[in-house]
Length: 276
Image (cartoon, rainbow, N blue to C red; front, side, top):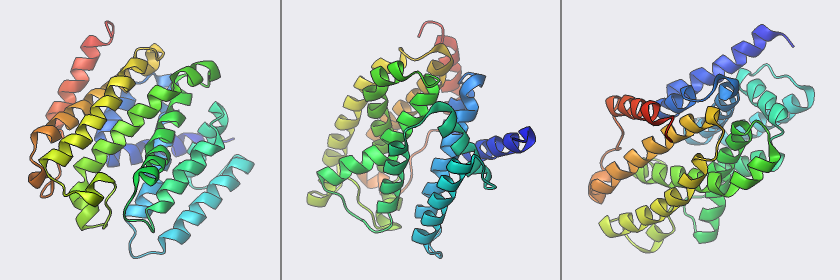
């Protein structure tokens, strides 16, 4: 395979990650060079699918998603795609032996956003699994460089961290999801209004996820640990900001961690990397 084309594909995934998520970009930069490409390729593919279901409202999004899925499986069979993001992702799937069930679960959850606007408890858990827990598991395969034994040991904790990240994303984006996309993800909000009490109930669940997820970060290889810890600290900071923000304000503006704070977190994790 042409190495220049390969490099272009992975760099494209990096550009997509950098442009759409500065927080994840900082985390990936803290990973060992040996695994950065793999994580960028996963982030790039996930972001591409997410944009299809959330952004291109003037297009036939179901058709676009079907075509993207077909292109991925053609690439997986042939070992090549002229779509740079798809090519980089299939390369990572093959290299680290990422289970196809994880890819299918992710696509199912993304596809549900095309027709579903509310979720009961069962549907919500299935959506969380497919939208972020499996992404965490794909990344875990890269974090442990395909070591199946370590992957199996750390799998439950990686899932909890992915779930926490998605739930706090839902809270951060609740105004846009409700007002622009007509989606209500939290089952609790189907029977109760969004107020400070219901917000805190959701946050309590997220903090339980964090408590379990933190255990596995220390067990990751050194070349993975710093990057995951950086992302974890970023999301903890975002969670605390949301906890301090009244529910009515969350329905008016999107809470974010400032770039200055992100750099400060980056510095903190660098200083604490050896003792952590």
